[in-house]
Image (cartoon, rainbow, N blue to C red; front, side, top):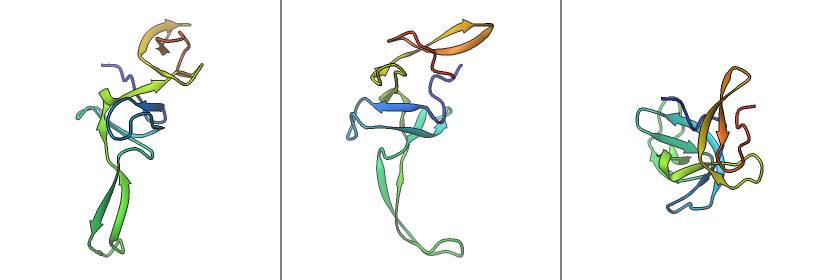
Length: 104
């Protein structure tokens, strides 16, 4: 299955506690259908000190389900679905809202 959302994409959160938040995709887990978005779904972990880390309270982003985010349209920045087209012999992702290519 072709990836509709990839690392580095600008996405908008559609549902949940962080609804409306925008951020960049840091990590994609296709097996679990989850994405980690910068500044979204921030959690605090209380960690013990180890040889590599000092320990304490660590804040980081937790993954959210891919169905709860949508790619920001390159033209106007609003949420859009993603389609695929063949342009110049290459398969590219296309924003359904404006028809513009997402892959540059």
